[in-house]
Length: 177
Ligand code: HEC
Image (cartoon, rainbow, N blue to C red):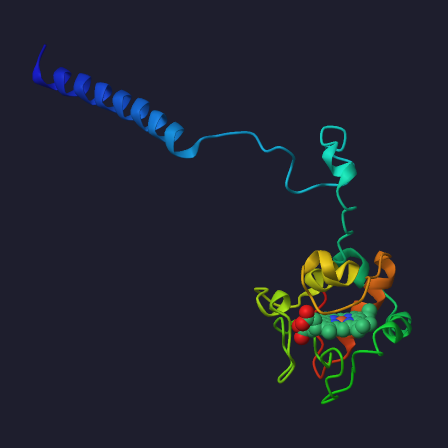
């Protein structure tokens, strides 16, 4: 064997060893195991394979597809369910709940001087459309420990209308999703 062949043989051997050991180490580090159920549920897919879904809370319908056609006036009617606790006007006061002018896209716990629960204060991110959807469908499920004593709006079309109304309460409404 000449030197070149030796080098090639050594290289092939080294590559093989690296491949083997890295696979072995990855196996130790990653501990692959199967999810008990799929994390993201797609309606109509995998339902039979995940019977646990039947016992949990019903999945909340995503709001984005409904917003474009949502009825802002119907949303204003829905907002009557909120006015016992919230004002909606620009610069309106906080009541039992915070003022909700320009809430779409605002950070969680957005109102100055309102004593929020830790549940809302510690939520990362902003009130984007889907966050509002989840919260308004079931406030206590979205933010366990929230002070908002409101059962939620179970109908997706009601939430879409209301969120479209909330979006309109702004000097520059956020773009639709
Ligand atoms: C019984 C009183 C009450 C009703 C009714 C109510 N809320 Fe609230 N809302 C609250 C309180 C209190 C908070 C503060 C929650 C916390 O700190 O946990 C809150 C917080 C919120 C927030 C978060 C605001 C922020 O700055 O992070 C939104 C959004 C909201 N409410 C929307 C609504 C909408 C829309 C309705 C009507 C469908 C509604 N609420 C009905 C009392 C109420």
